[in-house]
Image (cartoon, rainbow, N blue to C red; front, side):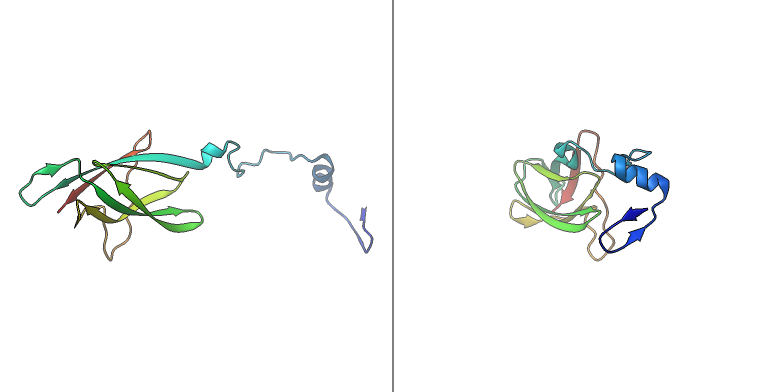
Length: 136
């Protein structure tokens, strides 16, 4: 029995032992990573845009708008694209969705863009790389 200034109550023996010893009988499998770097993943993406004539432009510059979906919700990120490459850091265990693409001053479309449809996560390879194919 535990006595407090205003009341007393009973605790099950295991709970009482855990509280007194400061340990649990099993490790907490839901605890967050202990290394702060494990909370994030660094991603590197490339984009190749194709014009109406079928010519590819692997060095386009502009911006890509992403939605990052994690267990806390969705946040928007606008990421610069320089010479066909982009770099961003997102929370670990989250999904990346493309929601807009402007390359060399022109809006571009991609099969990853789902206007009015359900979002489609971008496949991310081991090592944190992804590729976007786009069309003007």
